[in-house]
Length: 505
Image 1 (cartoon, rainbow, N blue to C red):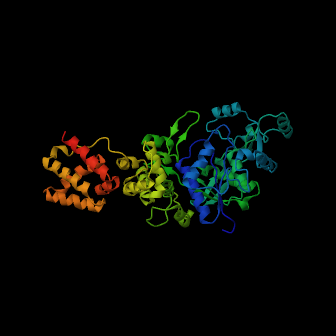
Image 2 (image 1 turned 180 degrees about the vertical axis):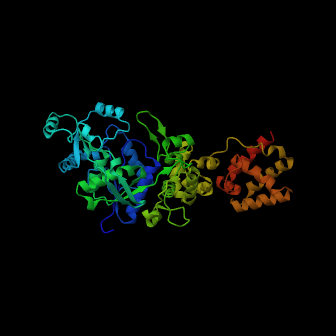
Image 3 (image 1 turned 120 degrees about the vertical axis):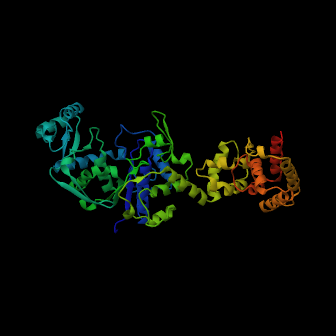
């Protein structure tokens, strides 16, 4: 690859960022960084009717959270600014006019009503080679009529003139050779009546001007490929056209069709990277971040939807992904989304994470539960004990709350029926042993506990569970003597006393 690799992600600011969108970013980013290239964020906001306030900021925040920071963007700037298409509006008309002058495009003056009438009278009407001469455009009108309409300011669009009976073929980096019959493609609008380009014209012009070397996008854009390839050719830029790759879809868990927001709502998992609140309806769509996913886990689960490195490895850091990524190992077939597998990735990444990395997340969880963190050392020790038991970050509260406050309730129903005076005697003696313990560490506490149990003729299993419930409140948590060591001598004895009072009440 002699020329510098330059790739782009070009979203429309119309709402939340779907899993598929983030994976497109990820594959672009990994490819660029693997080849020492640049990753560009370009905002395609030419459709002002669909523009949503706050959506661009949301997209930028998503990429930041994922650690996929652009080298050039509206926020960062760069040598090919501006990076918002609405700010590039004056650029596009000259290219649309160039296409008209070369005979590859034409003015169309049809009103919405005229187009609607055509669609109603002709089944599957397509504005293309078959019907264009029946419409009101610069191909069916005389040059003087066209000039007069333009002079009068009659609203018009510019359409590409798709050739009849041709085959457009290109090589896709994932799919190999792909061919299209031009008779099946309509004359797409390139420039709208408001002077804004459509995606078709803007994407080609911007990719050319920004020297994009590779264009990776979702499979749903394949039908547009022939229009874009012809535009590269008609504008005389064919030799500089980027290499294409159309990424496979992310499928519903059952494999039937593309995963949508509705599927997530129906099946109870997010399909957006972060929470998105629709400014018009106020509807909240949940995101992976707020559910408690680590960004490392999120991008790891995404990269495995349609790519692997040829080994059995499943856990990859971003640097490992950059090192091993190759577009040749992206599958053609769609990848089924499996939320259980997604959670597995998160659990693994929480296990791998250093206590200091998890600290800000767990501090926030404690704060939101009314427990201010005054001792980060203590928090780190608790984290080391419970992180392996967390699947999502908020699980920390359920797994660790008893380290920070006494359990409100004790699950005594499981131990009360088998309770005996001997057990009461044992725990009263244990309080004395613990109170007199010269050192307070898990190993010594366990040894003292077992020695006393043996001396009293009790089975260790029969007294271990009651101790856990006394300290934790239920039948869960890490090793019970590790818990005792951390909460300290006074608190351990106090909890045993309170539990005995409840049991013997």
